[in-house]
Length: 165
Image (tube, rainbow, N blue to C red; front, side):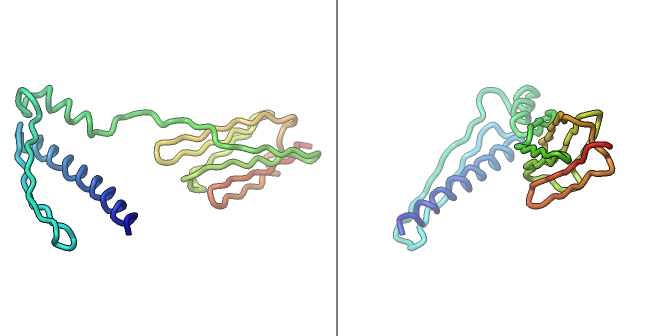
């Protein structure tokens, strides 16, 4: 029973933080520098009752001043940051006939995967949700483009290649 109470308090922290951010956003939208927040406290079993109140002030100056509004908006806007490039966890298995490359690509759909054969190298690319995966594998042979066999299942991409004859 104690664990359940702890879980509820954790969720109440997040809902409280969400409410606090909403109040601050409303202050900016309505060009308010200060707001008073009041409410009632009630427990599930009605044994604990109370009232709360607090004041939020955004500081000197006014919200409508361009510098303050710009600073506040910068906290919540998505920045045009270039995608992060990650080298996926990759295994390369070689045998006398060719090579098999197996890569972990979490969160990627099959349509987001690219494979490029150039000379003696294979370049694997994929992108999804702001992350770009890039892996270049140097081979001991020139791969035959007609021998490419690919599979994708549960975020695991594998490709087998044979040497060009």
